[in-house]
Length: 108
Image (tube, rainbow, N blue to C red; front, top):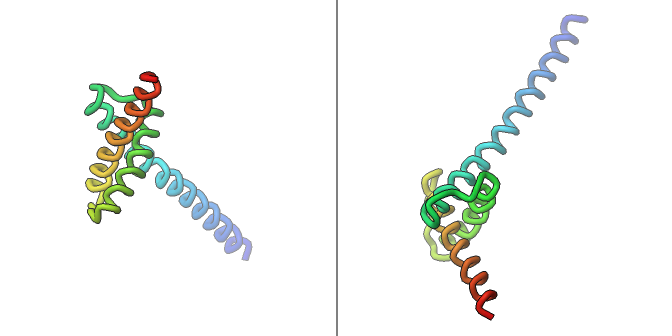
């Protein structure tokens, strides 16, 4: 009886540990994808990335902008490649918009 209780406790500990590791992996994969998207957009626009944090933020913003824009246009790319393409397009548009607003503020 004691062995069964110990076995159940160990099973709960293992399941909890595996769930925690999978949760971390589920967070790391999108962050790496956002970093790649931001890096690619940086390469296209300035020949280098914006640094790890800048790339992640640009990739996240680009993913949102690109996903919304392509959704409005009725174009839905599937899979990881489609997500990257939409993110890069959105990131490029986002950088152009920020540059446009930034340059207008200096022109006044």
